[in-house]
Image 1: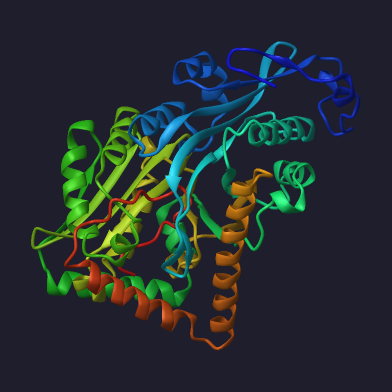
Image 2: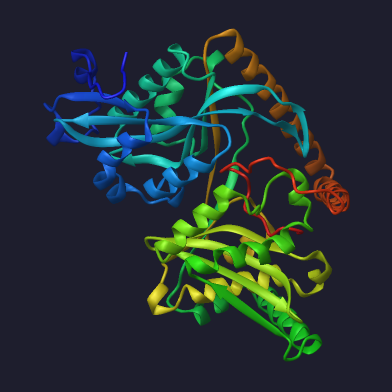
Amino acid sequence: MSSPGVEVPISHRSQASRSANDMPSATHCPLAVRVLRTLQELEQLREPWDSWCYDPNADLDYYVGSSRFRLGFVRPHVIVVYRGGRPDCLLVGRVESLRLKLKVGYTSLFQPLVNQLFVVQGGLLGNGSAENCRLLARELKLCLRRHEADNIEFSRLTQDSLLSQALASEFSFFQRGHCTPLHQHRWLEMPGSFKELLRSLSRKNRHELRRHEKKLASDYSGRTHIHCYRNEDEVDELAREAEKISVKTYQRALGVGFQPDSETLELLRIAARDQALRGCVLYLDETPSAFFIGRQYRDTFHGTHMGFDPQFSKYSPGLLVLMHSVEECFDPETRATRFDLGWGDRQYKRILCNQSVQDGPQYFYAFTHTGLKLNILRSIASLIDLGGRRLLEKSSLLQRVKKTWQSWLQRSSSGHQASSARPTENAELAIEGE
């Protein structure tokens, strides 16, 4: 059993079972696993953490800032594999106590209160070899055996990854989640210029984009502009303007989308301090009509929040402010090579993006009464949801049902106060009001 501040050597049998694909130079290096359970301990990993991280959700400053304001946060749970006394890889997670919403469509069937270990998106850092992934999977199983959590949630994993394979091998049928959905994760590999990007779009999509631009210019001649927010002292104003739009959308009724709570504001400030914040608001007659918020991390721009006011939908303001944000990424001072729109297969993503992969959440459960019950409840909800979607897809009714449901939610939410529920990392990035 591992404990805070103590390194636990791996057995000789584990070392002898290394894959031939593992790093040859590490063949005779002793291995150890350590679990960090306090925020103070994390700073000792600053150097390797920063050098390995490629996803802003797993960034150390982002992680610490989020933890201090996140409802239900209990403590960090960061697993570190040491090779030859030096960190070789780590898995970034947190233990949280929360009420899960197990949904069919937009309706929650079950809302159990659980203690879960949540592994953040992009949380596998460093040498993700087959051997290291096996060690991480075994430590995660030990975590459940020690009753540190009822279940483990990974926000996004591809099924063919080494970590997915290690987890599938380590956890039994009754401990693995079932009927979990796969999502389309789309992004844009940026061409040499914005003009090249426009030429890469289909003729129909270029025409539609120009049509919306011309209609907006005709109806609001000289009365439209986009304001860009970059600095820390602009965060509060950005949040106020985005909230004026977000409160009108159906996503607000679902408890997802942009909400200017303490955690969101802190994360925007962190991005601004790193000179990575990109927030754009489109104004029509000085009225905020659409917004796009994201942050640049290394060479990739990550979209985080989008929305538009439904009363301006005929102009597609969400798409227009999105294209403005893409164009900004070609600025030499803020040049990005990738524009990541996260998972979800919305129409605007299919128009813009040129790369995709399927990934999705994965769940693992303690072999206890609570763990097995949670597995059954989530699997039932997922089975009903997936089955219903497939039936509607076959009858071409899915989009019609979704739009009707979303319109009802939008009307019902317009007269109610914002939900206090926290959006999760795997909530789909969507143009709100779409």
